[in-house]
Length: 286
Picture 1 (cartoon, rainbow, N blue to C red):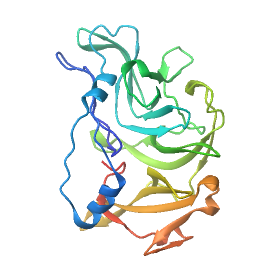
Picture 2 (cartoon, rainbow, N blue to C red):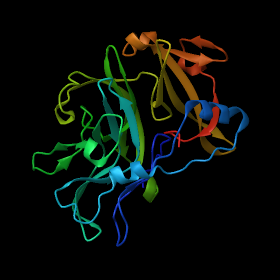
Picture 3 (cartoon, rainbow, N blue to C red):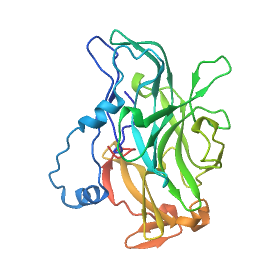
Picture 4 (cartoon, one colour):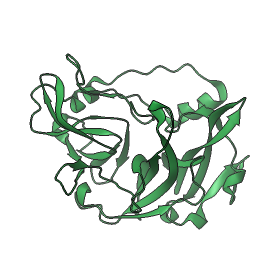
């Protein structure tokens, strides 16, 4: 199980044991409900979407090799009838007799969905290959430090942008043997190419670090890109994530000088002044 869970879509469950299938359970997340929840905590129910489960299932006999399960997902409409899925920790391999075989875990992968109707046949999965021919993560830090977990992204008239969380191994409990290093904004320079051939121009977000993250979710509205994130704060002896919000004109998302931060009803230049618009969130808004 991933250490950071996302509001995006969760619940990849692979055939790690007998009788288990690789299913993808989708939880609907709507910004309006999320923001209202911060104010009045309405009662909200969620349900799996069976069609989505079926599209991501990898049953016994999936011996051709490829993506067989993973953690988390963000979706980005590409504006040409395709939808990009950004996937976290993923198993690449085969399924035989209800179990994964010849599998390798990579820290991220992607899928392209052809058309709005999701089915197994509409999905194509992508990762890279290492020099030894084994599967490798699709996105990798240029400085060679740690690995990337994908956050959200957006397609604007200026291009395709992805938010990537850089993580590295560190001492800690068994389930948390890592630390957050930085958040990057990456522009895909050749989005028309297959994802395994993408070239990224990545820049570290200057206000983001192990404590303050941006890219948990992204919303485009009225010519602006709204970038949601979190700040870690100590509350009663516990570290809690508080939601903060930035925005930039859609045509200037890559210009960090154009970013502004929501602070008590106004938009300011200083990230440190950003208001906490929701308390006790998860890093990826689960």
